[in-house]
Length: 140
Image 1 (cartoon, one colour):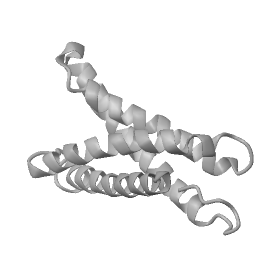
Image 2 (cartoon, rainbow, N blue to C red):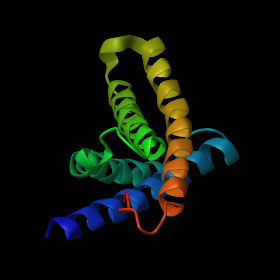
Image 3 (cartoon, one colour):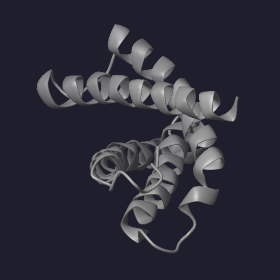
Image 4 (cartoon, rainbow, N blue to C red):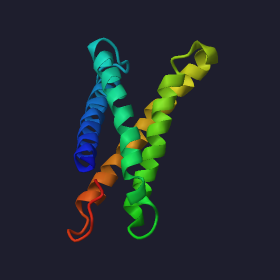
């Protein structure tokens, strides 16, 4: 049962991550810089799924990624966990008027740059996981 749950968390997490990348980066970098309309609706929906999957992934795989041997994959894991938290909190905090316009812009910029760095670490983690020796236990 736990094995099935882990596979579902990883599958939905990767699917929502890809959806977030497409709906966040394409409009921003190629269509004028503002995510709005249906792009935004899809982005926010995938964001909720990603948040749940990121929390589940952190809990289900934390013990396997305690530091010891094979530290490069484990460093990527923990950086992804921290950056996921940063990206989620930055976008949530940007929605509150409590912080004012300047802080809202700051949180959105943090969300953007944090997501770019998170994407790079996810790619590195997937590469490192795919190139591990077959006799070792897989990280995903």
